[in-house]
Amino acid sequence: MKNLLNDKGESFAKVLDYDGYYFPNFLSAKRDVDVSKFLAGLNELTFKDEEMCIVSYPKSGTHWAYEICNMLKNGNSEFMNSMLPIFENSPMTDIEAAQKKNGVHSSHMYPRHLPRDLVKKRCKIIQVYRNPKDVAVSYFNFSKKLIFYNTADMSFPEFLRHFVSGEVPCGGWVKWLQEWKTFQKENPDYPLLEISYEEMKRNLKEAVKRMSDFLNLNSSPKLIEEIARKCDFDIMSTYKNSTIPKEMSEITEKKNSNSHIFLQKRWCWRLEKLLYRG
View (tube, one colour):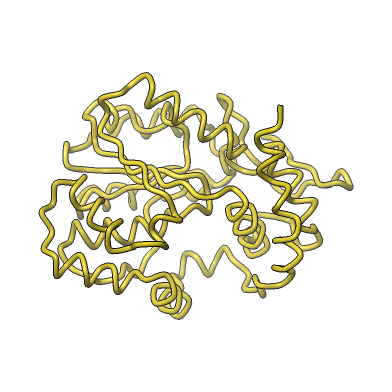
């Protein structure tokens, strides 16, 4: 267990420091779980070839991409009304249920921590990445809502310093990206599709088609167009904000996430230089 400290020396988050990664302290929706046993449990799972996983650094479009892939695999444009199954956060029963349903999974972990059989079976992976400046702002606002984080009095400049140094749950953005780049370099033939959050915002219909083609689903043009319409960022956000799953409402405190946005954007111009310094 490791306490991440704010500028006053007080803990603002507890993480499980293991194998170079800051696992959140709610593995399988439980606190204080032994990480090695948790990963061993994931490695006991078996997967079918057609199952797939969306990987991303937190607040990079995981839920957005999941909704799209879930619709594509189901062959309709119906939103899911439950928490998406994330390997490290969801109860094992939810992961097993996802396997039986359509085999769509998600994770924020490094590649070496994914279930062994998923990688062995070469299950397809869609890697979603996002401009780190926007990730930092979104991560900060999200941390204000989660009851697990004590960031109520933390300013954005302070959070940004922790974000840049990698002292946040799941570790640093740069380190996460490096781990996945290394995986791709070492496994050049692995079926992995990279897609950006910005690309999805710019031309969602094309992004949906790319995902469908990658998953070999032969989705009809009508379905692709309907999914793109339903998953338009504003339309999906409106729907999701009106139908918050019970599991999510139990771990969040609703606050005004738009406060200090202007100040956050003024600070973010420094971020790219800090992340790529040296």
